[in-house]
Image 1 (cartoon, rainbow, N blue to C red):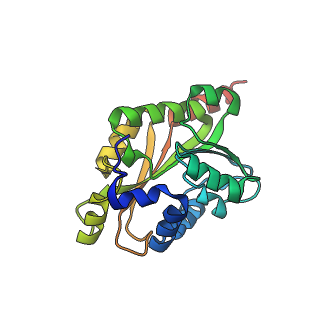
Image 2: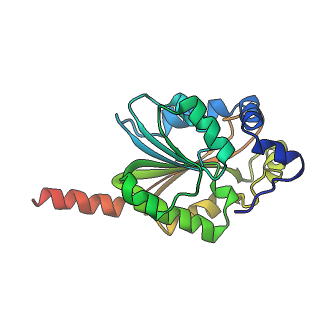
Length: 220
């Protein structure tokens, strides 16, 4: 995982400062838009959140979901448990296949602000786990800062100084996802924060698997 955690960036390792900074920038708006416009409209969603941070996404999710969050930071997970302990399962470790064996399948695998901290092999490993975790009609939703020609100079500067050291352009993210998924929808958003910033939202599915499942059902 490539990220800078020294100097001024080190304060973001503290949950209270992390949440304050995100709220100041307007990440609450981004989470609200993400859950309302990009999540499946389905009751009782099973959500696996990889790199969940302090699990603030739960503020914008309905009560009937089953939520499982993983983050390497014990401090973040402790904060999540304090605020949302009765609404999900929280693990202060990296998710792996052993976890998935007893957690079951998920409708959504969420990676909000994760891929730009991972190099290409690490991203492939994350997608491997996501494919393993997904139900047959599930989807992976990722959100990351993104370079693009039309973004403002301020947005580019902010992204260049992000803790994550593997920010890519839209094509770069999509190419990585295409090794695991046959159906990828990508959307550039410049309006999710209070400051100029560019996010790429990807929704990744495997249509071939869905079609095969559908065909099998029709012939039963």
